[in-house]
Image 1: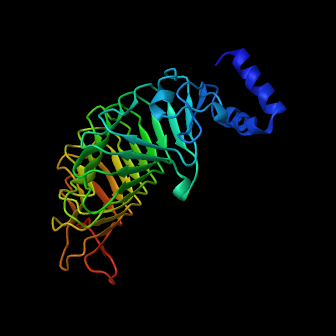
Image 2: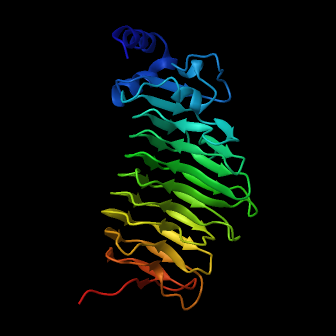
Image 3: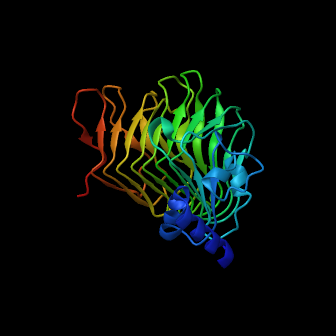
Length: 304
């Protein structure tokens, strides 16, 4: 951001109340550019530089960003857009943060309406926060494929619109998605077969999944390592799988890292798996329940 642009924003903030939030954003978060997105009041011809100059799509704001400058995109409360094709939103600018504003029904919504609809993350150091993603088609292949390092998806909600609209995978990681983080997210699937996994990953390093709440009918698992993760951490997750496969976390024989303090449920009386293919992963105080109304049991084999 140029000195002149910063001076203009400071002058506007001091002169008009409506710019006071923008001033706080500049002070607290970044020296990069700040852009706003609002499907309700925005326009394609707007600059995106202020809330009353908002753009109407997230991708349009990404296209205005500069790589590795700490640019922030604020998605306004009540924003809604539909992605009907592959890379309908393409996070292809390094270091960009996409932050949804609002809570509950005010949280910005992104609806995926075709089986190949995707929100792609192909640039490093991208952050996506507080967005409500909705699948509105049966057999959505993958919602967010991540193919770059240091991606962080935080405080996002992932919903299947109805029982007949299942998501195969909400998030997939390529081997290049090192240092991926999924923090404080929620996944509300259905009890109808059709999901494969909420998150499936290739052989990425330093994957962290913390505080995930996930329910669905997953043929593989809520969290599925399709290859060896190195130095991973899966922590404080509440996972429920309605599928007879009986797995909440599918590990990998040569994966390394820690799986700790997770609560796993599969309502199949007699189930004793929950975490499968432990390999060399270290388990700490993970609990499994196989019938509602019961207390969880420790998962895994105790060290001697």
